Image (cartoon, rainbow, N blue to C red; front, side, top):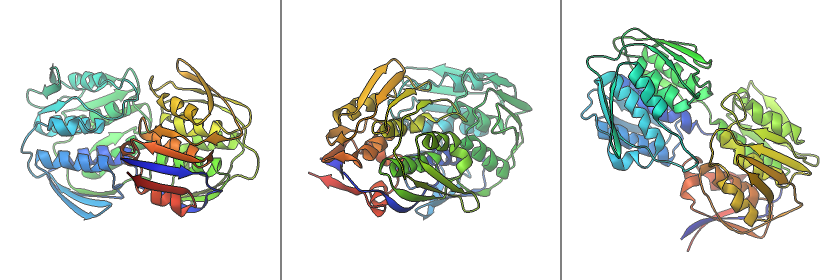
Length: 421
């Protein structure tokens, strides 16, 4: 059985380079379906989820060539099938993002229900509502969804009840080849949305308003090829920043856009962490020279505090002086890591979507499991300061979002290893 063992480490020191953003790379890869011409995508993180998406593209008829471990050439000259294999759809939620491009270019798509981390309900009803607004016919069956359109999609106004990132991305991709103008209201504002918009614009799409709550898309007849570099992963950057803070270290985080993680920077500063930004070099230095104190965090859609950093910041709170409160407003089942932290003698009490944390002098190593991707990262962070061994099981979750995570932590001085028994 495989697990990651973390032992109490001294202050992390050195530098770490952040990979391209998985949550940007996935929709951009899906968007390559929209053009018959060749595209080249660089700074793709070499992660399992990326490989699944590339397999999805291959299954649809794409010619996929790896240029190196972080660059890929994709050519979807002809789509051989509009049906995405269930076994691939079931492995990763983001595979549902091919539905918008397939519907836009081919006029039909059949997808299985998406899988992924079990962190709460992430319904696809907003995606389907948007497709209907563009003129699509939808048939929902037990384990799959069939979508088609008579002729071409037609532009329309879509109001999202919640600023869903996935729905915004899927509907943007569906609209770029639709007839007329499409308006997406209450759209997600995340940097990942802006990066997808930038890629679609390189292909020849006419989009304005990405990064605001209203996105306007004027449909075009066809798209061309392009080359695009994926933005840095803001969640990976935040994870290493929190790790540096909990270890009272001094770490230079490279390839990070500070404006993308403003709420994380603000909360770390409130807790007593020194943050030194170098926007010219896309670098942030994180160091701790004094005692850390508790704070309060409420997760929100961007530009609020990201839910994907909630478990990491909570782990930091467990050893900060005083009380802290975390309110989770995005996913209703994202406190699964709390029980694992309690095994390490963290003092956390939950009430619905609120967690109250009382800082303790020390955590204690224990056998724990990564209940989801970000929970796994938080347990590595906890292990850095826990007395004894912290053995983390279900490590496959962690590898879905962090490339060379053990090697990167080791390079910073962490006592961490992968064990197979």
